[in-house]
Image (cartoon, rainbow, N blue to C red):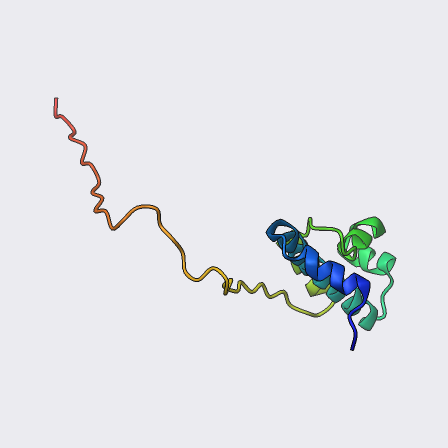
Length: 120
């Protein structure tokens, strides 16, 4: 299948590490928004009804379901999950392009200084 102009443009833009990082973060926010929306719809709830269950506003639910919103707190996600009979799972994955952690110093030995308490 032939690439569209947009696909070619996106591929070119993703060569810029800063753009690629922003693009990946946007994808994460999109995933969260879609999952919340899908769970809410499966439960047969409107945004307003879910807001009422969570004792928050419909506008807050709208924000949570917005792909551009990145202010999700773990406590709010847990509340949403509980109301929708789901659970929250956070997964950290190693970046395959950056194997291992790097330390600036070599293997230095550090010892705690002992403080002397003088007896009076």
